[in-house]
Amino acid sequence: MSNIMDFDRIEKRAKRNTLVRNIVVYGLLAVWALVVLFPFYWMLLTSVKTQGSYASEIVPKLFTMSPTMENYFAVFTEADLGRYFFNTIVFTVLTTAAMLVVTVLAAFAFARLDFPGKNLAFVLFLALMMIPNELVIITNFVTMKTAKLDNTFLGLILPSVSSVFYIYLLKENFAQIPDELYYAAKVDATSDLKYLGKVMVPICRPTIVTILILKVIECWNSYVWPRLITDDPKMYLVSGGIQNIRESGYGRDNIPAMMAAVVAVSVPLILLFLIFHKKIMAGVARGGVKG
Amino acid sequence: MENKSWKGWLYLLPAILFLGVFMVYPLMDVFIYSFEEGYNSASQTFYGVGTYNYEFVLHDPYFLQAVQNTFILVAITVPLSTILALAISLGISSIPKLKELFQTVFFLPYVTNTLAVGLVFMYLFDATDVTPGLINVILGIFGMEPIDFIDGPYWAKMLVLCLYTVWIVLPFKILVLTSALASVDETYYKAARMDGTSKWRIFRKVTLPMISPTMFYLIITGFIGAFKAYSDAVALFGENLNVAEMNTIVGYVYDMLYGDSGGYPSFASAAAIILFVIVLTITCINLLVSKKKVHY
Image (tube, helix red, strand yellow):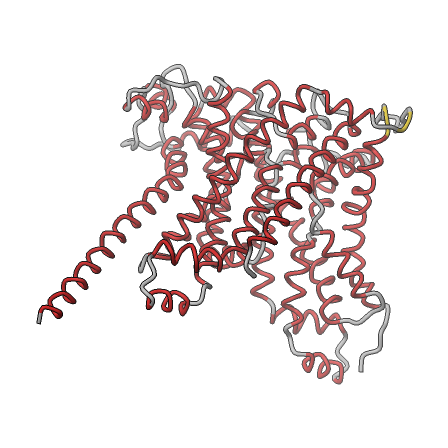
């Protein structure tokens, strides 16, 4: 009898302990979620305050009753944000497209074709993954400057195209496609290129989409190379543009407008993330490193 | 069935061209630059060959400042972010519901523009004519004097830089660790619980060994990433990092290339190679330690 009582008591206590532990864990996780989300909330909030009301708040208010869009107009008209957006979109689209062509062709060669020296070539490709960008960027800078490609889209794009990791990722995926499909296509006298476009690419679409999204994020956020190769503000991308607006004195004078610029720059990527968060996280977890 | 043909190389050609011109050639060239003394980028001439560039860089106070900053940043942010990421991932994996929501929210900083969000951090810590900044207002509630985080004492600036760096690098670590924790076989835990093993002991004897390869992967990539810190500092303190005393080694390399202080690819190359040697040494030490500690 008393044994059963004990058992009940132990079970109750265990349940209570689990409950307490869960509450504590949820609480701590919620605190960290707040730390992560607060900067986003704050930039959004500040961007809709008027300059006057922001400047008069000794203790910054955490909400506003009279949101305004005027900062967004201001930063697109007074600063050159529209131009930076245009540059970044052109840069992102062209770089990503070029990367896709180069990557698909190379991955196809490694996964499907047989040619002399293939294994050695693949090992050398993989070895390139270990080369830090900081080492090669110096010569690239000198090369592009000598070729008079500074302050041009070509100068921005060319060194940003190649990506060994994506070739590796796609090659692994291509290699999973059964050989029989290839032989069947060969019997029907399908060319390699046609087989690649009509069979392999559609089958591996999820991986290709993941690569595209990761490359777009990388391009949108890239700062170091664009800053090196462009010193004409007309050619700045959004990262350099934000920095330029800030250093021009605008950042200190009109913080709400500055925050409107930050929101405008962040929104496209946050939207992309909300739509594709599963793909992005799966892709990064497989070894993507921040670009 | 297939005959070996050279056609494969044709498909590889674009990749080889891009990688050859922008990775392989520069890699060899950077070593040459670093030993060419008095290189002039306008006329592409140099006086001689030797180690002067290295000597110059190693005696440059700005470089030494950058090395000091980078090492402090690495020493603080790598352990802090790894432990925090582990704690948060353990939290996520222990809760019954909302796992995915938390995972997604915590990953958000990864996709944001470092320069743009850094500006938000700057304003949160920065004082203007009217307000001492939100962080100082909060500190004031606890009776602390306002601190000038952005233009003030060295330790305050370093603190902000470390906090922002941790905020930026955590998403990747949390993501990788939660996937590692989720892939630990449930039967190990069941067996341990059967034997009445305490929670702390299960963590130390089961969880930690099972995720140790991931932990070491994160520590190694964490070191490499932290040594290359740069844009976080620019976001907080502006482009003139030497004046702010907040420059990093990578920042020093770029300063040698562009702007008012630029035009010295030889010095930049020497500094980049020194950085590379440091990172390589640390990575080798990490690998040696991991051979002893990691259970594969």
